Image (tube, rainbow, N blue to C red):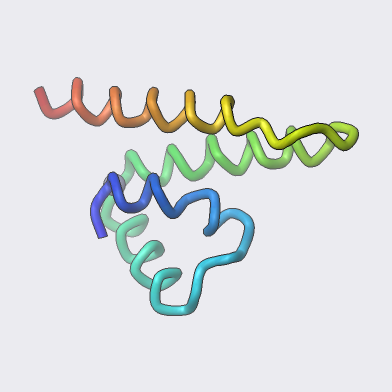
Length: 79
Ligand SMILES: [Zn+2]
């Protein structure tokens, strides 16, 4: 599990769709990686906010943008 893999799985994790092994790997990485913990927190806040809205089409665009921003962040941090 690395940061990119975690970013791919994060929506499944937040929605409880990950299997046991993936969930353990996910949580193991979270334990090691402060950036991904911050990202998860952001993601949870987003899901909560969306859950509070009336039924609307899934905001895939919002999620895409968050992921893009996160990857960008990872790149700039390492460079
Ligand atoms: Zn990470």
